[in-house]
Structures are given as C-alpha cells and as structure tokens.
Length: 79
Image (cartoon, rainbow, N blue to C red; front, side, top):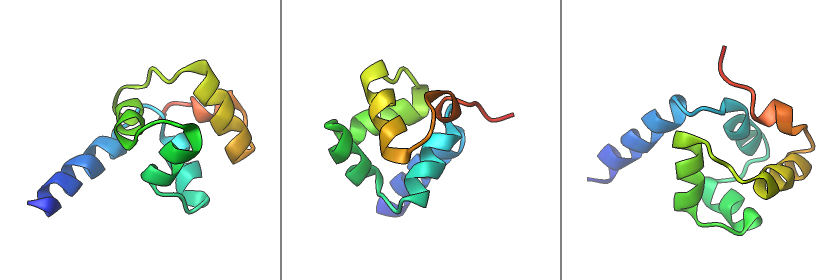
C-alpha cells in the first residue's frame, strides 16, 4: 500500500532533472507540501516539476529568492 507508493515517489525524485531544488528544499527542512504551499501550487504540481521539469519562470524566481540562490544553480543538472 503506502510504502509502495512512497518508494515510487522516492525513486522518481532520485532521477529528477533538477536535484538542487530538492537539495535546497531539504536544507530548509521543508516538505514538498510546504514548498508547494509557499509557491502557491499543489503538491502534485511540485512532483510533476521534479519528474519532468517545465517549471514556470515565476516559480523559479520565487524559489530562487526563497532559497537565496540563483536560478542557474536551481536548474543545474546532475553531472
């Protein structure tokens, strides 16, 4: 049940296009739900960004000021 779906999400997050966004979120101690709330979107939207990218510019700017880092840093891919 729940554990299976959590693992599925965790696996998706590991291969997410923008690991720095997740790293910064963790560093600030925010859950995905809390990050979504701060950005005015649903948790599902944040999961979609993490799986596929396509993050709107306005939300990138919001995250950049929230995390106090550049948008370039947030969009850096895994090597």
